Length: 405
Image (cartoon, rainbow, N blue to C red):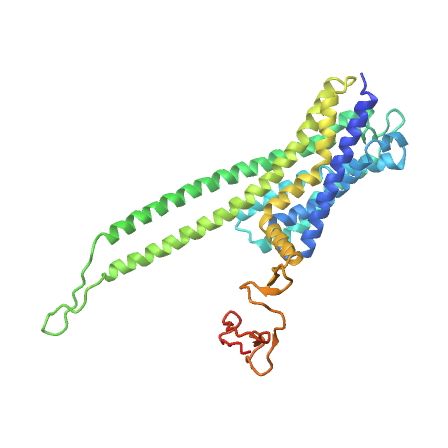
């Protein structure tokens, strides 16, 4: 039983809504990453690179079922199928690259500069390998089955006569890369947790030894000449040496702890990217398995969920991007608010008289050229005629001036 017209319209709407949200998310990433270096954190660079593929995937989602309407051999249908085959699986490869960065940093001691040198190869991996497969598939056509790219119920992709290729060429590579990515996270996460536990134990041991050392007073007697008198009292040189060793050990432990915290932060956000990718592909994969078991009974719920989550790739990545740079966004928004609504130094009274924040009338007040404040940071003010007010100007400079009538 095929999907009804209303169900197909609902799927089409979900594709376009998801594609629009993804395009807006990618636009946010492109703008903020380009205008400010504060957004160019290591993990955000890879999200920025992945957003190029997300953009083309969103375009394919916005095409919705127009390609099917145009016909299987139309340029629109073939372009949509090519974009889906090429750009959508690239997201899983970028997730693998994030995990690979963690592996290289933790086990191979790669620095940020070393990681940057690898990014050109990441481009080849993430956008080169899917391109080869997409080109091969668009080039194949047989008399019996026609083109590989064609209508696939909710959009143009690998067509029905070739659906046995979907697990091999579309879903299979994605899940193979996802399993490898997850294995890296499990390995690195368990080792970091173990080292964190060892560092905590060593830190507790140092704290205990420091407490014992402080509880014992050590006296040093220094004799000079024949008098044999007490020359000094204090800590023994051995105790000072131990303290120095303890401080060095403590510094090393603190450095390792800080490094682990930074690593955990990178792992946390890259793992969120991985989770978003997995969640994106689960409904569509389940729908594909269901379609293989029941080829003539499409499930509306699974098709709707698959169309929505796949079209939201760019949106999920934008959410992760914003979460990694939330302090930067807060500072930027605070700056914009202050620029739009600057603080008012003067206020108006009900009678229309301008007064400063201390309530001093300002009408007629001007600058007194007789006083030389010595710098542009301090101003000599002349109050309005008929008034005698002394106002300290220490907030502006180290000098103070008394206003004379």
